[in-house]
Image (cartoon, rainbow, N blue to C red; front, side, top):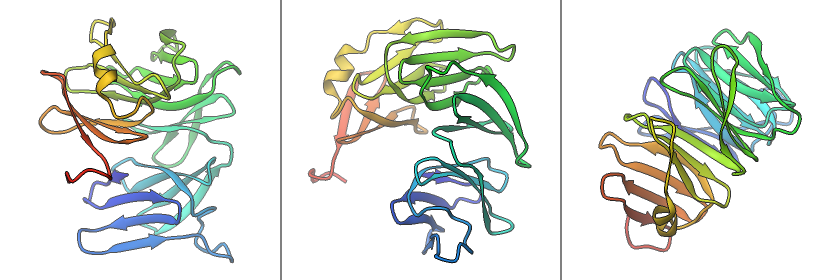
Length: 239
């Protein structure tokens, strides 16, 4: 899900890309003639640069750019497994290499990662460090391309930095981790016992400072000050 600079909501689904303008939904799908430019109707991830470009991972590994002004799709790469927004474009992975894509779709090789890395996600911090979530842990790469392992052994699936500069991490099977602003890893055992699932898909913060956690078994809301977790799932009577 992504909200663009106009306010439109973009949803990636198994049956195409959906745009909601507040009143109606427009659906973008591939066609047999290939005229639409979409290589697949399976949209795994949606992001945007707030400058008129929407980025997709379609069909599991196709990196696609949609130009809102020109109303056209362009496939940029066919071996991309992960992407993340930068302050001036997009971070993405291709065959273990990390690239930075500018708003005019020019790519630059930023870092040649180890072949053992399986990259799941990226996040650019307030301090301009790049966080890289992999199947074997979380790495930090600074502007000088110095690399540091911050979390070892966890399959990192989601990264988010809150307004207090805490780094919240989601994993595939080990629940949540939290890196404090001083770099120390906080104890999260009690939080993880309250979550509806330890498979984390996404994390974000709302205007009230509460942390929303998308899991394999429902949506969870965390009040960081109290540690209270509210679980929303399809079987509940709650909204």
